[in-house]
Image (tube, rainbow, N blue to C red; front, side, top):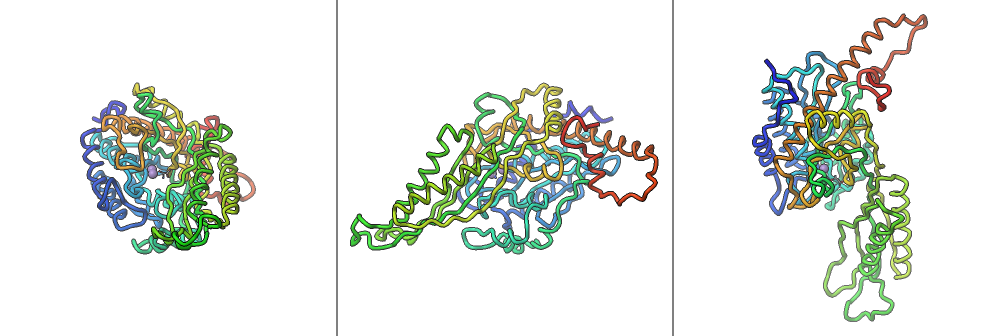
Length: 461
Ligand code: HGY
Ligand code: MN
Ligand code: MN
């Protein structure tokens, strides 16, 4: 006899110990360092795959390195998915990405214990290479799954040691050619829900347990190189220097000043990495390389801000007798998540009596890319003090469990909805008189529009 799932709660202690086991997979040093497309990231995927196999799923790794666990339903058909990423930034926190993948493990475990049979399959995903920390570009694995990344891009994106994304993929046994040419098939999915830590302070300050995301910010990421004239720090008079670091320092403040301007409310500009050459105490810096990350919930304002910042930086460098070179690392637009999937999540929260807040995400997420494959929603759990991408990142175990309760309830509602839509589509097909002229072979994707539902509630079953 299976219990009604809405009363099934996540096992908070089990979820917490699973998360700690995964977080322990890290390089030495403060916080968690498990970089994109490293052996360590693959070990994390192997552990995720092992847990999902034990939870009764069949597991495979797609050509991009995403690990996909499938739990069969009563019938075959488009699956409701969930998951997040297992890589981290350098010296990051224990929750970014892991919270959502461990919540997925807990959902599979509690469904197995409750002997719940879903109508259609469920899929649990650990994405590869979500963080842009190593290669500059975020969401590598989910971007490939969405068919949005070219083979050339995999060769062009390099880490700080000059290793390309393609070489890193090959070093862990993946084939970049195959990865760039094997997107996910929309017909295999009906909806996706990613659980993630908020990485901001809205929920924590409002003391609300869960957030439901309506919009995910975009980001324009650049690499800038200021070239001046290196020379002796003692023998060179102050006047007439072409000090690359002094120019870069003024340029960094240009970015901050623009983002603080009320006309750019919502724009966030950050210089997160800066290297100086030759980096000697007694030599005037000859060259400085730094990153610029411009985020916004408004794609036009984001790109206008990036263009304006670069223009103002060029003027600073010219005035200081230095040169500025700019390289685009990644450019992603903000994404509005479909309201009908979000409504399923908020309806589930109401049913479970979980207070929630609808909010935007300043951080980027795999959900942004997967929404191009299938309609997607995001559940946030609070980040203490809004901190993330640092060792101090923290989410309360009880709050992670509440988010997981909401995740499983939402997935089951979406499963029932997809099954009803599939049944309706089958009935419609059976009762529609055959067209006289031969029809072009419908792509599998066209069935997805019936089975998976479209973007607006109006078209939903
Ligand atoms: O950088 C981000 O926004 C995300 O944490 N990958
Ligand atoms: Mn993340
Ligand atoms: Mn992150």
